[in-house]
Length: 239
Image (cartoon, rainbow, N blue to C red; front, side):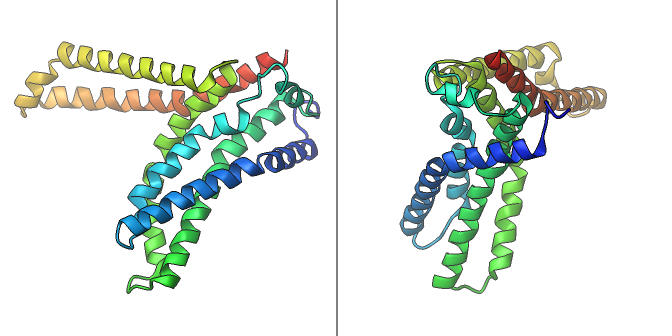
């Protein structure tokens, strides 16, 4: 068990990676904050979460490529391979950086900007209320953000070269496949007639049942299945 996971080794690799990624964190933070400030002045003094949210989401999705793009590099990747940690510890640190640390940095920037805005431009709405509303709206999209980021996590571990380009290609093919399957089910199950005939209760129940199980399968694959796949891809690189 000690060879698979050791807490001291794990904390050491997390500390080492966080320190080595400090420039990526700083650059991303400054870029997102600058974009938010620019949008603030362009929107006549309103820090809009609908503008900040998508930008921060894009940064979170591409975070695996920013942090771990050189993992499989023939020269730069040697340092990562030689880290005194097991594959499990490396993958957990990888998961922690992408799923926990990077999103927390984006949330911290948002809270900081909203705090500064409330101090410089006070309003009748309390800061706690505005932050709560913003965080609640963001939490509703969090699961989709994690699902999309899991594709990036697998792509950065699966491909040796042109990581993000190949990952975008895979995403395009997945979207094309989903579109084709959607059109297929739309025609096969007579959903066009159902859209007109609102009294088709049995058909509605069948579609609802099918949609529920498809959603369960989707969430099992995105992100959990892709997380597992990224771990095995990392293990393949270490062999």
